[in-house]
Amino acid sequence: MKTAYISHASSMRHEMGAGHPECPQRVSVIADRLLMRGLLDVMESFEAPSATIEQLVRAHDRSYVEQLIALSPETGYRQLDPDTAMNPQTVDAAMHAAGAAVLAAELVGQGKFRRAFCNVRPPGHHAERGSAMGFCFFNNVTVGIRHALDELGMQRVALIDFDVHHGNGSEHILAGDQRVLMVSTFQSQLYPYSGEQALGQNMLNVPLAPYSGGQALRDAVADAWLPALRDFKPQMLFISAGFDAHRDDDISQLGWVDADYAWVTRQLADLADELCEGRIVSMLEGGYNLPALGRCVEAHVRGLLDLDLD
Image (tube, rainbow, N blue to C red; front, side):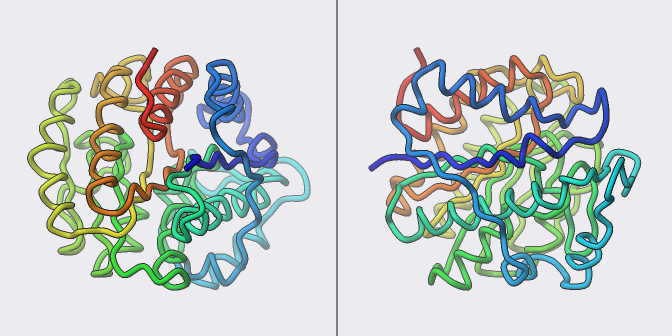
C-alpha cells in the first residue's frame, strides 16, 4: 500500500520577511530532494484541502480562529510576536497546512494509505488553543488528531514530537485528553522554555541536555517512549517531525546527524507495524538548515516507506 505525500502551493506564498529561517524554500528543498531521489515516484501525491472552521475549533478557541482570520493584512506584514508575522497569504497557507493533517488522518485512518507525509508550512506545534507563537498559527497535528478521534472512530492516538523545541502548543491542547499519549524530546532550556514539567498524565516529556548528541535521543526512545507507547496501544501514530536538532542547524545544540533521523523513524515504523497496522501520519515542523533538512526528510520518508538509505 502506497504512502501519501500531501502539500499545497500556498505553503510557498506565506513568508515572514527577508532572512527569516522559516522560509518558503523549506518546502521546495524537500520536494526537490524527494523528486530527485525518486521517492515521489513511489508515493501518491495529494493537494491539501483548506481546513474548515469546525475542524480548526477542535483544537483552538473559535474566538482565536476568527480573530486570526480577521487580522490578515491586505499588504505587508502584521507582527504577532517577535518571531511570528503574517503576510496576506498566511491565513490561506495555515488553513491548508491544517487541512493537510485532516486529509492525512482520513487517508490513513480509513485504510486507504498506510502512511502519509505532509510537506506543508507554516508549522504548528507551538500554536496554543488561543495564541500563535514560534512561527506557528494553527496547530496542524492536533487538528488532525482530533479529527481522527472525533470523526474517524479512533479511540487511542499517540503523538510523537522530536522537534528540537518543546511542542508546547500540542501539550497545551492535548493535556488531560486520555485518548492521546504525547511523547516528546527537545533541548532543555531552549525556546519556548517549557516542558520540564508535564501538564498532564498523558504527557511524557524527555528534555535533552545541549551537546548530548544522538545517543541521548536513542536512549530516550528505547527507555521511555517505546515502553509507554506499547502500554498505551495506540491505533494510529502522528509525528511532529522537526529536523532542527541537526548539528548543521545553528538554531540548537543537540548535534544529531542524518542517521539519527533514519533510526528514530525506523523505530516508530516498526512500532506502528506492531501496534496499529502501520498507520502513521507525519507532519513537518522545524528544520532550518536547508541542505540538512532535505537530506533528513529523505531519510525520514525512506523510513516511512520501509526503504533503506542508499
